[in-house]
Image (cartoon, rainbow, N blue to C red; front, side, top):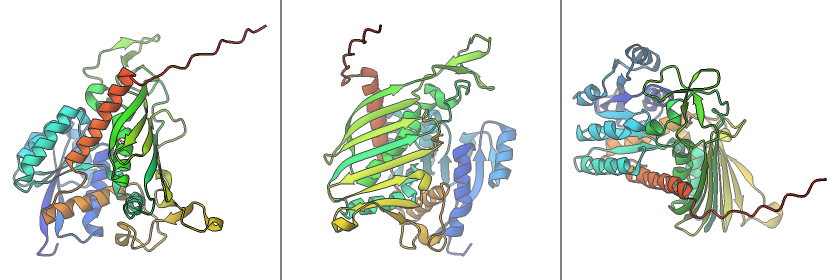
Length: 402
Ligand code: SOE
């Protein structure tokens, strides 16, 4: 570390999928990007002593603890990275901000609008003493997504008419998949809607620079009862036909909604965990008066671009390979044509977070940006519950069969 580099000591709470993805980024960020600060992977926190000790060694953390309050109380921790289920985001984040720690909190910001508002207030207070807060919507930092935003912001698409976004997964199509925390409202806040719907809400608002002003939604829980997981403390149990302990799914399996954007465009969204065969398929298409862009996370180094200004005989969607040095973030990696992956978006996210902290500026997405997502999530859930705009279709009389 050069002498003029300041060291920022990181404490991370959580060590599952997001903890692992963030750890990869903490290990890598200072090796790839020239930053005036250096992150030190000081402490990882998790409830289970043996598991968090293993995670510390496996993921590259110097120490470990089972008490997040101890982590926050330490004077030798400068940054708190919150990678826990949503039901603890508010408590941990607010305590960390009040203790003067910069915070990166995974998405969605919270499980409720009320919690999100409290987090925004805590971040605003902390900001007055130079403490920074950011929410981890990592897909903003996929280079092709950042390029989409640049194309929209430069006017290449003209007036935005349509946004079309889906996030398709299929990891719980088996009814025997257990009732994990993501399927419990008190832990996760909602199901596909808040977990992956939040991503496409934030991503499309980020790319278009517009906000969703209203929605009409339907949601569904296809499998309403599931076997209890091995560690199922606190879950109400009943028994299925074979006598196995089961519990109620209390979140949506799928959410579909239409929306209006404040720039006048129309949007459609689909977030589901029952798109059989689609493992992690986030797709966005944006149609403007002068052109369109289309992105597919399964081909995350590419962006499809349609320029209506091209001569008619040449018109058509063309594929931009987003690996040039002047594409967002790409100069830090390999020569053009050498592609990157899902985990690089987290390294880019930490690069921007550390650069903002070092510059004394506010990283984005801010907690206010994340509150806006939470407000959309809440509106979708309320619309689906009320069914307010739902107009039934009269069934045609069944044909009289011979
Ligand atoms: C859902 O399984 C999930 O892990 C999301 O929680 C993440 O945010 C997404 O990046 C991958 O899928």
